[in-house]
Length: 134
Image (cartoon, rainbow, N blue to C red):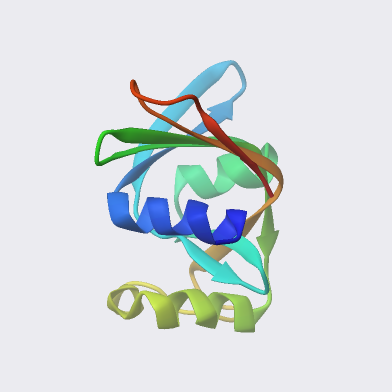
């Protein structure tokens, strides 16, 4: 299994992960649930009206943490907004329940971001970390 597929599968299996952003010198952490592969990149989604959107567009350095089945993952990298409607549509196709709240396109309220230059580590108390670069 390719690294990006392993990371995405872990996040989906966990169901909820925690995304950390920064605003000036203050970290912010909140639960997220979208993880999607589009054009061989790992994408996440949020709304354009949220503080997290503003934080990620100002400073794309983020971290994700999730726990599943006795293991945890930490994903560290830079996120880049993809403003193409096809990227947004691909995310909402993967999470159709979000279509009740989000729309795509130039006047839409959804925003999708992909990871660039990222590293993930899957760890547990019973094995050495598995480091994945993507």
